[in-house]
Image 1 (tube, helix red, strand yellow):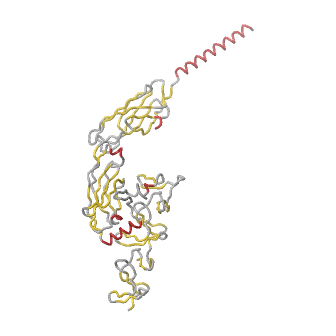
Image 2: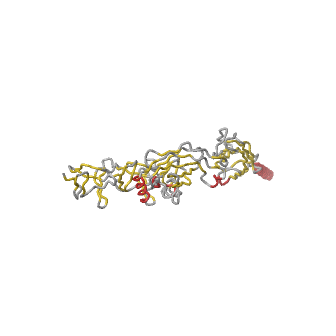
Image 3: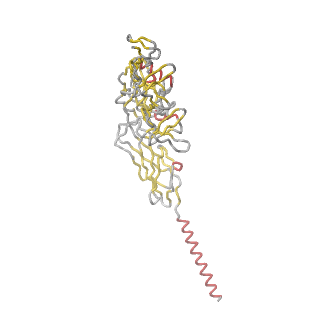
Length: 409
């Protein structure tokens, strides 16, 4: 029995030694996780030249760079284009990659974009962006006035242009300057308050100071003329005074609605923009869809996709006009040299009389303001061709119009 007990204890001792040895071996040869990465990127890229070069070096002995290549190369680069680079890292023996994000990646000479591990966790694809390609931005190919509404300038897009500078002229004098806008159109009408021929100049420019370090402005392109009559100028002054102008800004500088002033771009962080347009994020994360919403004391209309609408829009059978900034126009409004009256509750007033103070106006079935002679319920009325107001107690074209505005045969 003693012999057996001694043999049992010996067996247990040997088993313990074996387990300890195995454990020691496991600890000794266990792989270590790489929790952060750091690389240095060196590149040589020029506009209108060949592809250029890019390389990367590891700043750690735990992993090495096995490849570094352009991800969006097209043989040559244009000014303002952002080269993208994929860097493949491979862990050294005894190491593997943990999950890597922006806070765990240091990239010198470029900007981190993303990181993706291979299935075995021993390889990591690090995606980065280089600084924008240095050079001069292209020239705007065409600049023109839209047929309607008056004062709506438009120009062609310049590839990789972050923004545009636009100047409005009347004769030889500059009337208004838009320092920077990311849009390719601008409503100048509220600045056309003097009779004359107007034109604008536009060029591609950098949007931020950092972009200005490597991007030079493109050449100016000039539009044709747009004639503004005395009546057009008066309408522009009315728009400007009522605050319905969409250009915003003051002292000769401004910006396209989304981006400055009372336009969507000034609402931060409420307003958001993507390739489909502007939409508004509410405080609870929701956004208006197929509905009106009051934002900073102005009404905006959103479509079924949640995007801000502009121009003439019909909602619940009523017509409204929204500026290029998206805010609803109210009161007297001239569109394509025709006057309309827009009520904040019912939209475009049409097919009846409209009273403004002591004056009466007649709005045609299409909503346009009537002028001259009209017949209404078997009576003839005369509306001043210049103002649209109903004439009272006057002789017009040898016909007497009584104090009620009715022609007396």
